[in-house]
Length: 266
Ligand code: CO8
Picture 1 (cartoon, rainbow, N blue to C red):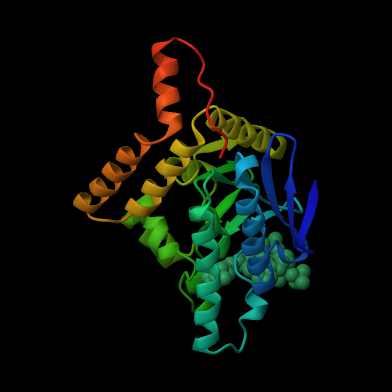
Picture 2: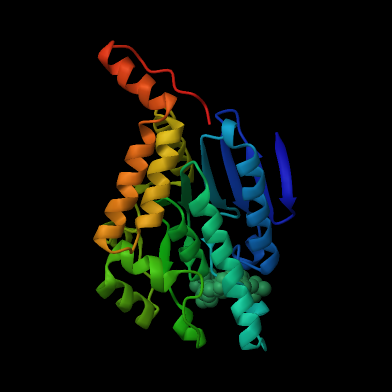
């Protein structure tokens, strides 16, 4: 099944119940125009509607050179602060959609992940990338600052010192440094290996309880950046709720009976 959310963003549901969101605007290195962001948002409407039959989501960039080279710079010229706010809020809405998605979302980076492109990747659960990838927050070179979560999520992932260094210098880092910084969870020699690796991870996750995965993601997202006592309460709430699920009864019974659990889908 192939559906078109918009010409520049494709959503496909493949045979492995994986939703693939392809940003296909190669002439602008897949830069995020408002239309592209709206289309990603719409793609997540469809993914959420199909939730019970979707095991995970991959976000990829078309064209072979870029994941996403940032927000669309040509659309920024001459814009007012109010328009800038609208752009940033739209970007944050997309990030919130990704974080609210019940299944894991993997950013499959092959090429440039810059500015809003890195921020899009940071909103995903995992960043997998090829050796040909480069990452950076070059906004200050344009007289801007990150507007789609870079000041918020980057320091959580790489630590405040390295985040400040990246945001203030705007320099690009390669795969080695990105892995070492904890930005990239796994590296791959090329795009095929990247996509195969991402699918393999989704398949491994899908062996587990969907309700438990969704609950773990909800707690991880909600707890990020919260004080320890609040984060701990969120975890207790999620742990407690799990005791009321069929999946918990089934998972524990299956372990004790030495058999494979049969979890409910979605
Ligand atoms: N926006 C629009 N067009 C772009 C962008 C972009 N971000 N990046 C590249 N393009 C276009 C180029 O203009 C060029 O178009 P054309 O062929 O018509 O001239 C085409 O893509 C190919 O790019 P280059 O010729 O520049 O290719 P190079 O190989 O020479 O360079 C680079 C590749 C290094 C990636 C270079 O294109 C570059 O520096 N791009 C801009 C990167 C950048 O600054 N990104 C940050 C943008 S600001 C941002 O993301 C703010 C996020 C917050 C926004 C709020 C939510 C949306």
